[in-house]
Image (tube, rainbow, N blue to C red; front, side, top):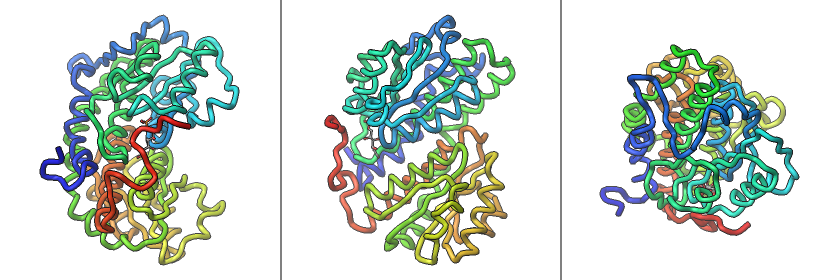
Length: 366
Ligand code: F6R
């Protein structure tokens, strides 16, 4: 049931306060600063043996994996590769003892993701999955799993099943580091405590919906759009662009901002909206200078920025605001205005938001 909302996608965007609350419930012990993921069946012995993690997924789920790479490498110091499942399965990938293949899938039935898991199984990998659909194949074949606590997702464009695995991957990184004995207690407590505010802050992002709608009205006739991000918010540029193209049919590209001068900057003119992710993270200064460069070439810049950031407010043409948060968790927030932006543009264009052309919710064929 859509209730007060026009589309399931809008409802599911708004459900993120609840889904993020449920994602933490029972897994995080804030008093002790500990994470529990019992369905992963991870022992300290196995955790210490892991020497590489290969994350494999498709589409939006793969973007979550790109953020997860930064979490696991930064917190647990285990090398991570992120691979598109349809590439991984045909490449004869190198899997050695101690390699984990971790797949991420909302439906748990995506053909390429399942085939990537099978490839991992054949080559002797430890198989994990992060899955939403209970009892799905990706859950059943794994040695251990994390179940997304988001409930059914009906809209074809994935929203709440993107933010939940971000938090799952963060919790996984903390658990791995803890079991391997490499995480100082104080640091662990800080990382765990930072999760506490996530649901409320997601709610604060949603309060900005009226401003997002006004930017959506400005952008509704664009032919193309460029999404730029760096570091932990680079995958959010990919994700924002994917959301826009799949439901509004506006051509959009996500790009690592540092790559602009190697080609794509040639595209910038007054008709090309540039959406720049510039929250308070370690790549902030670089993004601010990227905004200046796009402006200098006549581009129209919409920045995703931290509430109260006068500097970016001054540099950009308009801002999509997110509340302040420790940088590692910023992608959970920065994606929310981009979900709303894509939703409202498609909705203003009168499109079938929940059922975009040519797309299926569960891609069970190659
Ligand atoms: C985009 C979207 C798709 C899916 C992809 C994988 O909004 O939903 O890109 O993320 O088809 O699906 P799952 O997660 O079911 O394996």
